[in-house]
Image (cartoon, rainbow, N blue to C red; front, side):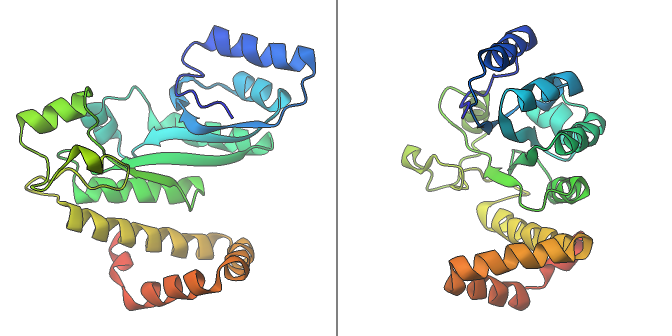
Length: 231
């Protein structure tokens, strides 16, 4: 596993690594659990990744809202280029996933919903979702300090990707939890609608693995109906 957030930042270096792996016939099976920057990818690089043993690739998209990417996260990614790359990776035989980050300061409820819709449009129904987390030394941490955006009981001991550390006038932890649950139900229904046979196969596998957790999730899904807002 390449645990390198910047594996593809230098294309020439990445190309040399993949070509070296191919030439050496290492026979390694590898993936990118930390995700890779989608704007650095190309079809030719995807081919080399596949040939060198890559079996899965996670696209670090962060948001399905172009406005959030441009003005809040400030990530140089054009979302229009993502779908073709994801499609090409799948045709090459790679398993594809995406990373999303929600709860950034001043991100709206509708913009978060855009991320879920974008994930469903890509056919990724179980995206890796992280909560915006203000680590010391980061620009996000400095912003939260300057604007007093930490929740009232915030502690540095709470810094993990589901800590809900940020609270603004329009979005607090409880509201964000509700939106996340809403989005997960939307993706579940989208999966069922788009590919019912695969949905049933995945559901059956989860039932066999952990029946108690499976039925608990089904009960929660039936009880809550706010997923309809995303339609």
